[in-house]
Amino acid sequence: MTFCKSSNSNSLKSTGDVLKRDAQCFYYFQDRIGDSFRWKSENVSTTKVQDIIGGITKLKDIVVYPVKIPGTEGSAGMAAIADPDDHVDLDSFAEEMMKSLPKYAIPVFFRKVKQIQFTGKLNTVPANI
Image (cartoon, rainbow, N blue to C red; front, top):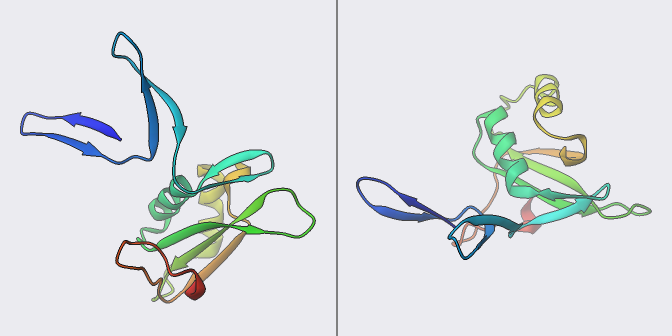
């Protein structure tokens, strides 16, 4: 959580980061909570990858999740992108991904789908991705 103080009000924003406060009231990053996976000996934040993909594609319904590949260590990333009107140009998308993410964080697999179903708590319905 991040505390934000503005002239109008105080608010909390859930960032998925765990912070530690010392005796002098300085905050330090401790860990990231939420969905992440290990690939090529690196931790990959699904939320960060989703945000970057959303910035590139200008689409809002994106899900990044880990998938096991037999014979490999860890889990590879898969991204499902809801692109009902088929606007995403995969060549320029791939170029932007290479510029925006470290190699280990780029999803190995991509799926373009018409729609991503969400539950009432905004979780995805995995069977339908």
